[in-house]
Length: 375
Image (cartoon, rainbow, N blue to C red; front, side):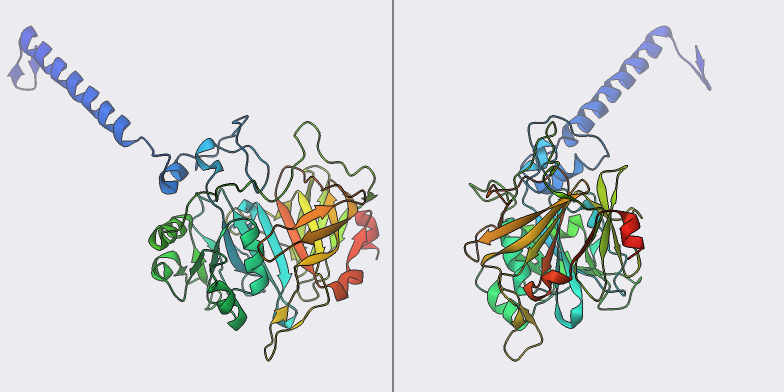
């Protein structure tokens, strides 16, 4: 046989083919070995679940949403990220990937969001990230989440110093310079973000625990797939309007998707990651335990969370009255229906609105979208 300028015998050709086969086998073995992922490192397990594939009947579920989840990430500790909610900050990055979002009032009539994630490993940008307020810290503690923020109010600093949560702070700590980054798309202070990679690096730098605390069983109770919560005894509610007078948000029920679509500042609120409108399966209203006040000699709100209060639960175009209780700063808030039974959320994401008790009568609810449009 001729190969270029070389004449090869059958024996020589056989040797060459055998050598090539050995090399191919060695390459396959090397790729196989180096491609294996460790189940002990969230950075590595994250890589195995970034593909868009359906996770079905794994036997493991998210403690935030009740959804089926890959075994490799089901016990990974969540993060709670403080996110600005002003006109200058929108559209935010990553809200559609959050399992739970808290919307609470802050100074000046604005609201700020805290998005809690357990499956965020494909996100290259989350935020923008802003500063801490004490009541968000207490909520983050309820989910055993690592709290991510850029600085804090005076009272927030005192609270964080107690160690009530593990936190990643852009202004201090070993992780400050590796967790947070700024972009050129917005002006400071509206351009600070984190990513999955940077948060995991920050957690590693601080030496924080990466899995749920021993004995932690989750925050919410979830209905099963086969028996979703229908709120049969509740009232029809196609439009939900929490009383936040600056951004004037509202949710409209989408019968096709079974989700509530989110609007604020007079238009659909979207996620900059996927360009899609933000939508949620469950909405909870929680009033403050008592009327709010300003913390002494500051402009910051004091919103009491320990005790009990009124609220609402919305899902599948229906609503019911609920009551909530929280026994201590470190305990979990529980929600109960009129019969005293702890409510079950439908599987999916949840948006919690913390309403000042003095404004609870200003929330609005509409049975139909037409009724809302004609108000």
